[in-house]
Length: 443
Image (cartoon, rainbow, N blue to C red; front, side, top):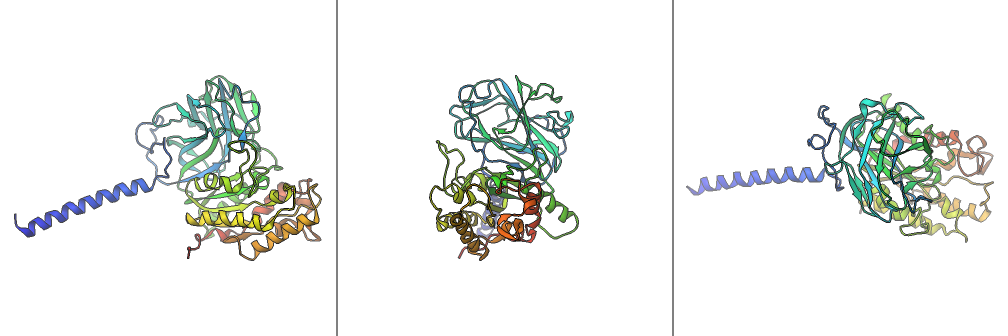
């Protein structure tokens, strides 16, 4: 063989290796790092007869595990089917869920889980032809260690936007404390025994206002290119919104964004997920290990950065740091905490929109000194020294004749939380143009 032909052959071999390496890298880079998941079309998950689908994985719904459910320490949800009802922000042709045993003290043994589109609002019944069994690593069962979470394999199912979806789990044995999100503002259901594949809803005679075990629903979507994560307290959790009406400000924002895009406006196609926990603070954790109601700083990595395909985070935190501090809160400490979260987002290329703190005059915790702290924080936010962009919820909802208080028709009555009209006003005041672009480059 001549030297020239040898070099040519070597070049072909090197090119082949580079091409193969590139293909492997692209395949790995497209994975978000969570285990126990199979790709659509891998042949291992049941109910996979639908045509192959393409799209982008995004979050269509999520919630933050907030505590161990009182009264479940001994028996957990042994021999019961938990049917969580969640509401989608965008649709897709495939789905996967995340289940959490964050607050469990022993392994959580789930022997069967299903997903289905609800037959309607306010019911445990499913559209029978949408019922799918979920798998984990190709099998129907999964054991989640204490303090851990797991993502299911992807399953082919058409999930419409702005619809209710039923995710049902069955565990035959006690797992100790149940990981839950307390204030769902959405009725879910429980049945005795394994009724995960029941589409009638008849066995689900127990109702609950909490979400159990379930923390996320992702969809393979052609409607969305990324996810907006709203991190907040009860104002984001929607504590005073009307149950089963999806009247949180995040719900209204999702509907508004979709409508504007449908009308031809040039805006990012993003889904919206809600990571609010009532009583949440920027700085202070609740009691326990792991902490009930972990601080925004503590949970930012898990509840924001680990959500699927995050493009923008909206932070609305700080009021509870002012109201729940037995001493006068230090505005600089709160601001530094907010800036720390912004830095973490920027390190991942995520843009941050931050909300001003809304008024609370008339609430039992109001004092002039606390009002001064709120004003100091808002001044820094408006001056652009905290976030990339601002959602001025304070200006949108305050009483123009007394800016220390909520406008009467935006007040739920407790002088802290909005009414449904107030939540809608928050979403309507949000400048959708701020969703454009990415995080500023770090110097």
